Amino acid sequence: MNVKFLKAFNGDAILISYRDKDGVRRNILIDGGPSQTYLRKGKKGKPEYGELHLLVQELRCQDLKIDLLILTHVDDDHIDGILSWIQDDSRAHEVIGKVWFNSGKIIAAHLAMAENPELEISLHIKADYKTSIPQGATFNKWLEENNLIDGIVIFGGKSIELGELKFEFLSPDIDKMTKLLTLWKKEDPNYNTSAKYAGYSETLKECLAKDTFEEDDRVANGSSIAFILTYKNQDKYLFLGDSHPGVVLKQLNELGYNKSNPLPVKFVKISHHGSKANTSSELLRAIATDRYVISAHGLSHGHPDKVLLARIIENNPESRIYFNYPELTGLIFNPQDRIDYNKFQFFDANDINI
Image (cartoon, rainbow, N blue to C red):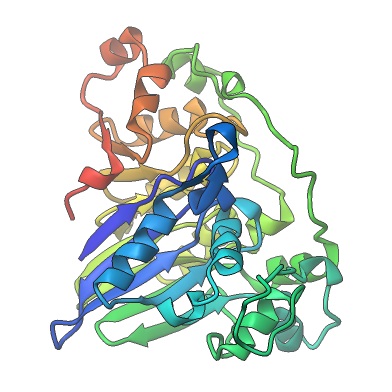
């Protein structure tokens, strides 16, 4: 199995590639990052394509596809890259096999509740689009029209087996899905905080000295899909999306995992780009690994937070922390950190050896 962490700016876009029992390469994409992961305006207004676009072209050239697309939740930094692709590429549906996505319509049907109009995601399809979907269609309509979504709802406690893969879902729970359906409103897209608030000027020990944990309360993050992936009934991997730690820990406990019997995984993709509100020390103690992956470029929302990194290193002094923007490490860690903790290491996420 190979895992690639795309440069997705402040978001997530993770490609899992493996060989099935017949030796055929299969691909799973978890999220698509913000829109610029696919396309953005460059100098003088010229388009610049990101790593998601390059991935799509690579798959096409090899006559491969994204066999499964998992969209963890509705936040822009996880879904907008996919929307940008769909709106730019009239043949995008040909490269996607199946989609798992807790859309507002799917959650409403599962809970027998009214839909939340805030969850309706609009698409502005190019005029040359060849199917019957008109311009301005919704994302859910596009998925249905192209037979990409089968209406299943993903929630903690559910498991799905696909060939040699097993997915054990840890999040969301019913309460978090209900809150998404009843309380969520699209947030200000201009929300932005500088990384200078992430504690990079402080040492790891100073971060720990003032550490008090307060769990994330954002409704969208609470609805995020998180899961254990098991390959060939052997190797386990933990993908936490932007999930809330309390929900994940509760489900791990239901599966028999805790600090006395931690879940053994090859690596954990840390929740919410390294936010200190999405990974508690208690959750870290329930996971047995020395590999921790951070997906964030460090330029917005204060992610990754140095307090979170300090928790990881305090919990596991020999931790190996992987960044999809490894240049961040020069900004985050200082010489005193190396004196205080001399065994932890950091790497490029795409050099992870699994």
